[in-house]
Length: 435
Ligand SMILES: Cc1ncc(COP(=O)(O)O)c(C=O)c1O
Image 1 (tube, helix red, strand yellow):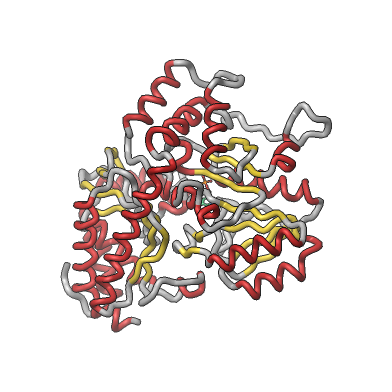
Image 2 (cartoon, helix red, strand yellow):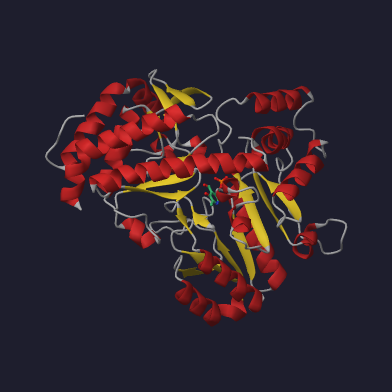
């Protein structure tokens, strides 16, 4: 790394270097942009000047179309906990393929997968499958409105519940529920808002740790207060555990002692295939029982697709059973503490927030407790961290998120700590000057 006079000039140089090193990614992007706006079909993957294109992955390694090798610290935003092409997932998918896909009826995988999901996440006494976390939340919220006869939904600033449930500021195309937006981790203000809207609130939905919002865990007291206030007022508490269910044997909510009325899942639970699920109290979910008069409808051509069902069974039994959650979380906690120790020793404003295997880098001296605190971090410095990490062979989200996967080793953690140490040494003076 060369030493620059300002963060801005360092970032310009890093982007120039990135452009020179990645001509095949640039060509792929230009080609994609001829048919897809901005060459993009997942907003989160966009990066200026252009995103990398990947050719393949294996274990915890990725190779881009220019032939560079990366240690994958992103783990497909939590869906890739197994790493790439895990043999148990491959076996399950190949076996399902051989039995025929798109059967147009129920299949033998469905009840087994549902039993496994319920055993793992006891809050989901009854459950239904969807194709994505977005859809799971859409169904859970629609159910809450139908079940309570109320119209408002409480969400939290900085929360993310899917493509049409973005509460992080900026433009949105959110599904038009009547939202009340509360401040995350501010118990007093949230309880006041609940009291003011109690008669109209169908549900309060939140992530037990803001994932996309910067890996900001809920305070225990905040979550418990929400549980009590929602119960008292007949409001449904929905825990969106699309990202966080991997963090403890029964999910992060259960770990914090909170049982929601409804819970949603996505990502790794489907073994890397398209997946979502919503579930919870039997009296709520049983409204979907088609044998009952006036049952609520819930269709979806691929809800029970055999590839997801089969891969999900392998994920929950062979790859990431409940007992595998603690060692992976411990690995993440050790790495986070080590990285934060490096920054603290150097007195440089960079830190790593999160719980267990989910981390986010912030250009702050201490991990943020709220999205507003997270927003105060220097965005140029965070972009520079991304480009420096990529240059050093580590793949993570542009916004600084990491979701550690099972095949990562201690040597990978050492190598990443070395990269962070070098970033602190080389860029530290610029960060401190800009803080
Ligand atoms: C907390 C949370 N909820 C919901 C979703 C949406 O899931 P999907 O991308 O499968 O629609 C995400 C995706 O990142 C998420 O992080």
